[in-house]
Amino acid sequence: MTTWRAARGYALADLLVATAVIGLVMASVLGILRGSLGAYRWGAARVEAQQSARVALERMAKELREAGYDPTGAGIAAIVAAEPTRVVFQRDLDGDGLVDPTRERVAFVLRPGESVLRRDAGGGAQPIINDVKRLELTYFDGGGLATTDPAAVASVQIFIEAGVGSAAVPMQTEAAIRNRGG
Image (cartoon, rainbow, N blue to C red; front, top):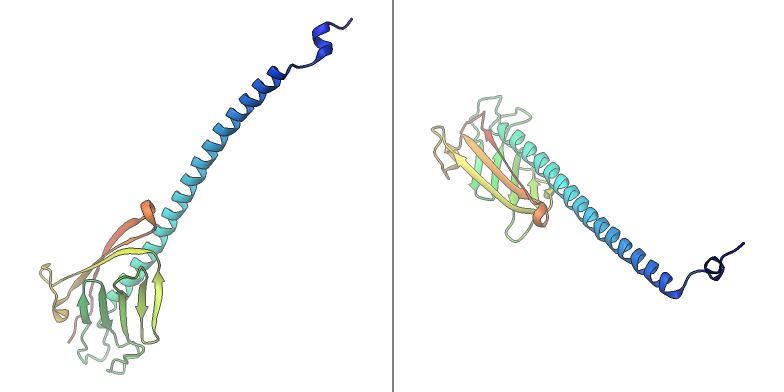
């Protein structure tokens, strides 16, 4: 025997309440999903900025440690220009006692108004890292005092802040100039 309530189905009010509840649940789920995707994007951007900054710092430090390499003892200058956002150094890689400015002189530079750190080794300034907010190069002499004299530079402190928005990452390292000549 079928009851009268079971035979007539759902009322319009029941359907409206169920639709409203489902709508609220879906809106909550969508809000959580949007927040999660935003956190994922922020985290991925931060990781990318960290990795890029680390690669740039390691490359700059490695090459700066080689500055002044001179197997012939000709006394080439290690650092040619020591500026807050630009460093130019050289090394005699082929051991001929001369520095070829198109292959053996290197510049790292962040130009004013740009957000791209570039490396110029004679073939044009190639990008190393994008989205650079700040590059600070601080030069120290043998006694650990700050200097702006390229001939006196014994180490370079490199500070770089890279990334977009709140995902920007500050990193820093110091590179000792091992081969000071000139």
